[in-house]
Amino acid sequence: MTTQSPSSSGISEAQHPEAWTWHILGLVNPALVITCNLIGGPWVFAGVIYMLGLGPLLDLSLGCANRPKPPRASGRVFEVLLYVHALMQLVAVGTLFYRAGLDGSYWTTWGAALSTGLSSGQSGIIVAHELCHTRPRSFSWWVGRLNLLSVLYLHFTTEHNHTHHRLVGTTADPASARYGESLWRFVARTIPGQFRDALNVHAEKGRTVLENTVARGMALQIVLLSGLYVLLGQWVTAAFIVQAGFGVFVLEYINYIRHYGLIRQIGERQTELHSWQSEQRWSRWTLLELTRHPAHHLKPSEPFWRLRPYENAPTLPSGIYGCFWLALVPPLWRRIMHPRIPERFLPGGLNRI
Image (cartoon, rainbow, N blue to C red; front, side, top):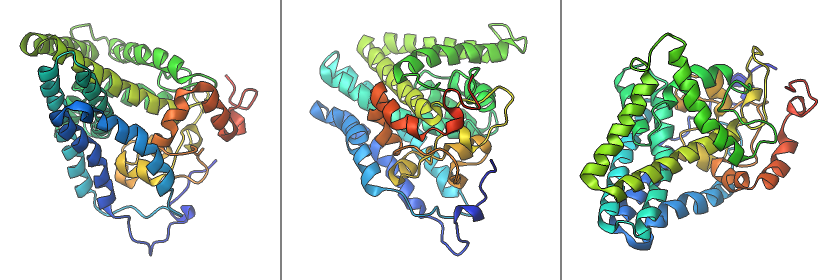
């Protein structure tokens, strides 16, 4: 199966690039979380309602473009947007500390933690994913690492860059969901599996525990939690852990739907068939083109604003938001997704493992 060139995707050179201003909509969620964490009361749930209630409706109502626009010549404005997201991520976590410090164990603390966790999944981990594909130890790379620290997931850079991109879709990749595997079983398998895998990446290079970047990252996270407990108390620390846990869950849920059931043999060439894509406008605009995942895997060094859809790639029934509730109910998920999986990936197909 050949990959799709811009000309074969129906893109006319006479078309103008899509306006970059649509992507500013992605800042609404962290801004909402920051504001409502400060206000308190029932408003702390605004982030959850906005992302998981309104988000799927916007995915459906705004639909998809008839054909993709050509990429922009310059990505400077998108680079700035990434740093704005990263800054708002730190501010959002700071307002969670404020709310938890005031309210203690009251229900508003946990509502704020859930809303902040969704913001962390978007402005924290998705942005970190983009920034950590840049040159190691560059400024952008360090900003991405800071974002990952804010969700206690520092090993993500190692596992994602060194294993997931190389082994995606194979049974050796802990971040790829298998055919028939439920979201809940996947999350229980992938989170410890990715951590062990990241540790082994450095261990196989002969690095001891003290030299292992992942082990040092875990030690740093423990120090951070200990410092929060001593300086800000148990409820701030607990709220921070809850938002981090929910943010990580959001990440792994997205991993689940982006590769579900698209299994390849180890050593088999990766193509656009090994990742799901979606062109729903709302998911594209607010999640930094995360829905154009086949393009990201085939061109991992390509920045998000230059990713293009592939004509032959498997297509999700909706955007990321629209798939959220489907994935939570395994029988419903399988009923909708299995007819969409290319025949070669079905049990008994060419890629059966």
